[in-house]
Length: 345
Image (cartoon, helix red, strand yellow):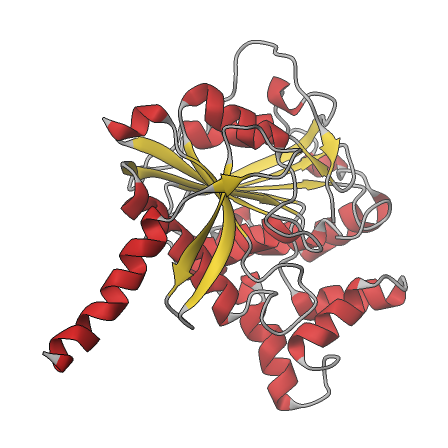
């Protein structure tokens, strides 16, 4: 009897966690959202998140949106456009904490943080009816970094991922932010155990936690990579991070040359030889698309902006994607009212 009881306890804990009573979401979230705690099996911890479970999901499978907070944020960081979309379109939503701000070893692309995001998806699948062919990932800044990282590390989950102004190379970003005396270099040192070059172990942390290390695994995932061309000057993440991420997925003839990349990074302009590669996209609003290139399931968009983004563009694009199918790069044909905003770092 004792043996049977011991084997049953973990199962009971998981079941109880799934059906535990929800708490209200923070005041700046819609009332339809709830605060929960869900199990993360990697360390048997209970992790906080904010969720939306539409009534429709009681009778039929619905899409799931996983929304990732920014670098210095946590799961309570408001995501108005994303939550409004979920409510309007009957999508389930979860905003996981994945160990909070990226200023500690437990966060910043750690094994714990990655496992927490995967566990958040599993939690929602247990809680309600989720369409496994329509599970989407979106994030900006630190969330854009997380979106590229998870697309590469767990491509089996996602029907599509949209990453905005994200970091792809933590070692490079340490040098860039240290040179500008920004706090993020210290955040990286706290997360990775010191500055790059401090030891082989520290260097391995920078490598393993960087999305560029894993992004080739995302070749089967429709991946929408976006960056403001002025970021890194008026913002904290140079647009070279998105260009290098795209190059790792692109076929050789579609890769951006180092000369063109350097020109765009320093001059904040598109080289004359590339200016024909643009596309009118009304969902970007004032963030005019300056350069757009597609290779397979990956698309790079450079827009006239800084550390900013358009959730409406991200969500509309995600809504077109289906798991196991080639990326759908259709562009909205009609003008629409678009809200764009500076991204919280």
